[in-house]
Length: 111
Image 1 (cartoon, rainbow, N blue to C red):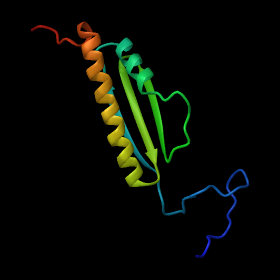
Image 2 (image 1 turned 180 degrees about the horizontal axis):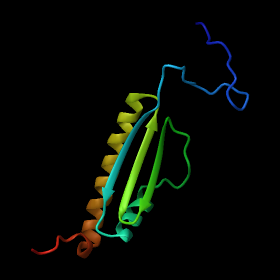
Image 3 (image 1 turned 180 degrees about the vertical axis):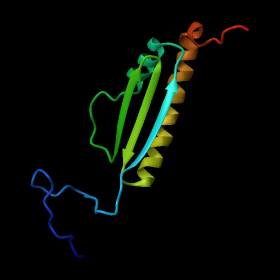
C-alpha cells in the first residue's frame, strides 16, 4: 500500500484526511422559525451536544430571536447525509416533545 507524501498543515502537521485543491467542503443550513425566542432557545439547548466532538461533520447551532439556525459542514457527502438525517430526527423529536409539554406555545392563533 502506498502512502501519500507528507505535507505539513498550518500548524506544521499534516491534517488527517486533508483535502486537495479540488475538494470542497459541503454545507447544509436549516433555518427553523419557532413561535417565540424562548422556544428557539429550548430547542437549541436540547440539540447542542454537551461537549465539542471531533466528528467528520461540524455542527453549528445559533439562535437569533425566535429563529434557530443549524449548519452542518463536512468533506464527505455520505457523512453529511447521515448527519442531516440524524439532525432532522432529533429536531423532530424536540419539537414533538415541546408540543406535548408546552402546548400553549405551539397552538395556532384562532382566525
